[in-house]
View 1: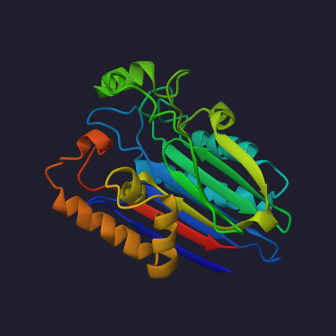
View 2: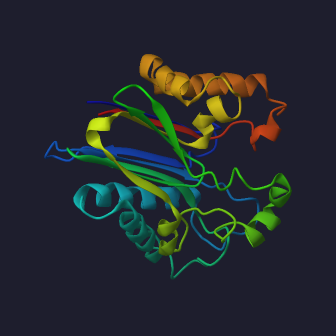
Length: 263
């Protein structure tokens, strides 16, 4: 099989808040991928002593270990356990009830000889190519479906929408959020390729409209994951004034991560 991973910070002088891993068990019978996009908090308190990269490293590390070591545990349960483990690491020092406690979007995929499992929480994307070449984007689109008026300020979002019914959900401190994820199982024989993208890389489709999801996957296959990130950076620089802000672009450059796996 072929795997490829690229993760690049949006700004050279700012730590990358994404996390990515690919794990291939020693048995050779399958594997898993984990992609997290840490949520950058607004200026001000978060109730936590720790940074977003600290959180994504802890949560991502726990998910990588659990998805491999416990292959029979559903991905929702793996995410729930990983959140609980990460929360326990700083519950005594931090206010985990704060709406901006460190948090992240999540994409998980795990494959075995018989099936491919997936989990998507919040606005990262998982692309699945079937054996006949059809590409489907598996998305949690709850954030995208919210009216822009409801997203006008961080205060409105935190008070009414973040990790609330009728809003959207991220992996933060509550293990129960795992049950809110978009999940499913596909026959392994029907899946040729997987690609997980944080929204910083998905801008190629979602913000700049350079092509559809099938074209995006094709670009990564032919030119590599770095080529997709490089093209997004070119587009961002060309539109530095933010003319396409209305399409969902919140900052000039965002952390961008791509994990590609041909099964």
